[in-house]
Amino acid sequence: MCLAIPGKIVEIVDEENDIAKLDVSGVRRNVNIALLRNQGVEVSPGSWVLVHVGFAMSKLGDQEAKEMLRELKSIGREAVDDIKQWGDSVF
Image (tube, rainbow, N blue to C red; front, side, top):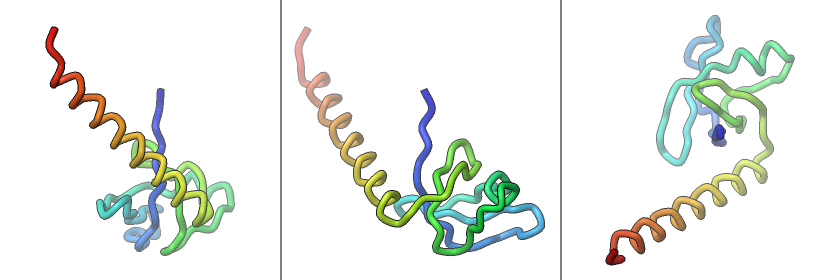
């Protein structure tokens, strides 16, 4: 199973090599945006993109990206709760 996460482009750091700095919940990383640009998709600071292993795979709307982040955070909280329950159980 693969997981792609939404992130917001904060700057284009290397125009020639299609590298953008992305913010995902406060964590910033460089990602490759060439796949989108080669398809004619315009991305710039403020654009939301879906990222998998360092590559922007698709462009997202604001609402869609925020909803995905909410869902991912919810899943994360549920996983932490499950881990705590397992840790507290006695076999």
